[in-house]
Amino acid sequence: KQSTTGNYIRILHPNGVVTFYGHLDSIVVSANQSISQGQVIGYIGHTGYTIPAGALGCHLHFDVRGAKNPFR
Image (cartoon, rainbow, N blue to C red; front, side, top):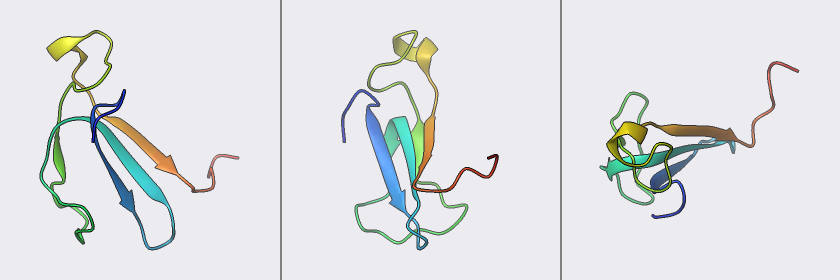
């Protein structure tokens, strides 16, 4: 999918937590596909809005959503 984070993947884990991976160059999994720990799901890139723009902005945007903060 495209957004300000470019090509991205959201993974729903069995405990209800969602992990998010953005700015991917390419995605190698399909919607609703079961995946395993350690499996390649995509490749880092600079799609969407990155600073700096272009290849110099190549990075992975990673979020964990719906989990309790263990540092509080």
